Image 1 (cartoon, rainbow, N blue to C red):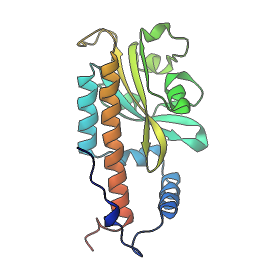
Image 2 (image 1 turned 90 degrees about the vertical axis):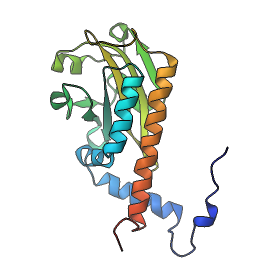
Image 3 (image 1 turned 60 degrees about the vertical axis):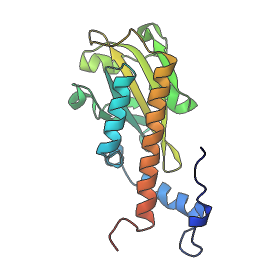
Image 4 (image 1 turned 135 degrees about the horizontal axis):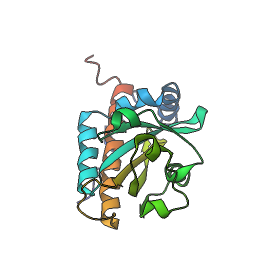
Length: 198
């Protein structure tokens, strides 16, 4: 069954042009830091992501948000035990697999990641862990690419299987897509003033 066609919901004179909506959202996003933007991912969305990380067989997952002026991706949320040390870590764009996924806007899955020439182990060394496998997918909201969501397996942590399968990538990508929709819905509701009780 296809999605419901919603063209009739548009009210002339009430809804701004799509270009103006995008311009306003882009200006709002540009004025926010990754630490502020991660607040758009509410509790329900975090539970959805955490469930996907577990269902995919990951040890933990991270939301990386772009800080374009500084040319960095910032670890803005992490579901693991080391979240306190990991959140705030800045990965330079142009280094590592996370940056590659951001630049190419394509999902990525790597097992035996320590053997990959593109793997940057700076974060592993910082938190004294060893990443053995990774899924990373581009993360869009507000009509643009805003970062990457990654799911990893760590050495010495129990996992359902050794490495990820293609179906695991689909689990993380599907959850990421749903989170994007939740954020966009909340942003558009706010933009139209429908959520302020007026």
